[in-house]
Image (tube, one colour):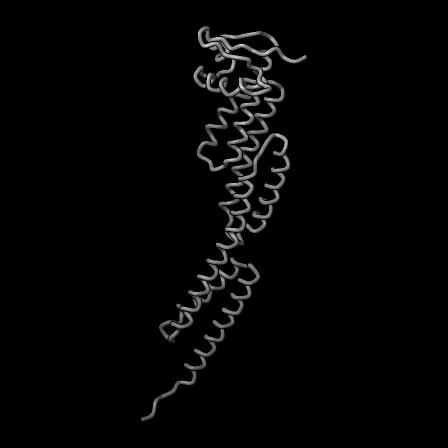
Length: 249
């Protein structure tokens, strides 16, 4: 019994498989070179080619090969994303203060520049947006420090409360610690001003001057009065008076 062999059929299939093998070699090279988006485009083109000819040829083997390549690309993409996310997360663990904020901002700007350079290459848009949001809060901190350094207590205090409200839902732990430290320094400086002008103040008067409710102020006084450089000497519960230390000359 003889079979009719169509040479053109085998030639077409052979040419198609050679083309798909070429795609595969190009994709593997692009993955190795870190050209993830380009590799993804090549996989998509190969899969379209397979779909166009799947009714004419048995291409199940090739279909599975390119599905494996897509999985490999996904893994590689995630690897690069993890690297950048880890770099950002490590910066979020840095302990910030007023003196190192500028240098920290420079490091963060370098990371942002690197991410933006590879934005489409590794699909880093969300990380870039998160860093931009972080910089928005850094800008607010500089605005607070500007008020704070010219001893504009109420403007600085108001901006701090706005900042705390805005950042509450964000996962920026070191900025939350920093703003808490700035607020404590702001209050301390204000208390030192009062200590130069008077020996004591009633709790209610001090509460109004600091724009802090009395319960919260009492908690703060309890912590502050035991510190060596505290401007507060004591608090008298019976008279509800805050006694200040005499400032050193």
